[in-house]
Image (cartoon, rainbow, N blue to C red; front, side, top):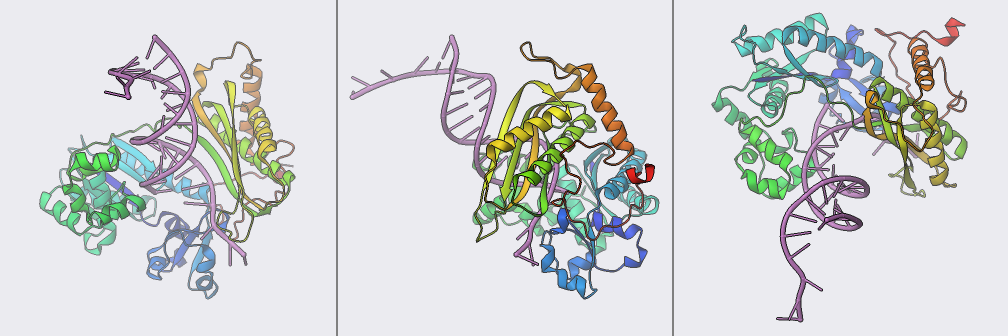
Length: 420
DNA sequence: TCTGGGGTCCTAGGACCC
DNA sequence: TCTGGGGTCCTAGGACCC
């Protein structure tokens, strides 16, 4: 049996943790740049605010005082997330952290707790008491069914936030009343296509012919079908697989129309991507960048382009990655556009410890370079932006907007200013 | 005026090999 | 009229997830 523990309205619940006055109020958290809504409290959902709506569409509610708004504060949510996961790890021997706000537990070997419903409530209560955020718990034979059980736990008040799907009769009933689009692994496109062939509920999908569906859709959907029938097809990974790609991209707060600020942004993203790479203890052999104008603008000239460079030998040196990214930018930059977004992507990653130099190029993974990068990281861990490269920009007028940011309740940065 | 960021997996098709 | 069979690797694009 698997349990899926998922925090309710996670970002909004985090913000409420330190603002008990917001209990029972409509709260939303916005995406980067205060662009669109990415988390909603139950009260905000009740106001009819849909997921991912642009903020300007609900700004009126905010101005009337009916809605409380926060910019996203990922350092804060990451910290609360770690507390939730630690609590879970204390309760279950095998935990797979699936995202910032949810985790699967493998209940195999938890013989001490034969009553699964009681176990679910125990988890829920402990996280509420120890960390302070509400969670829902779904328990079933496969991950996909546990997801579905969790969905039910959140949508039906009678369940009190815990659903165990071990009884086949209950399972059938739930599948029969659940829209197929709610099934984990069925997105918007597949849902449309499925509806067209009269597969409307999760039960319809579970009863469809797996072989045919595999041919018509993909092996992924076939696995989903089997999982809905109680046949486990998805693995359980306690250790996350090493990343295959590292990406850093941002929408600018204002449009960029000249090369210089675009270069600043690309330098900034390249440096941050390289930092992530080093945190993961990986090297890259492929550096890509992209730039684009607003794809939604109807009366503006559009332009989007990307470029990739493959290195002869892998690196995680910020200086080299930054240099390559800038050269790539020179190649694709065109004047006369209002740029909205840029990004740096690192692919073809490999572990740091099997570094193989190239016979025909100078070594860029020298011990000297490595210890320089380590020193850089140590300083920047301690002092936020303590050391930056010339040309990353000091003002960064294009940097993202966060007008509704909450304080650093649980994390801190020693500002360089203070140190001086 | 105004719409995020960071990932994964699968498939089809092309290029290439013997 | 008429031109094989069996592979691998890479890439782009599409779908999905949070």
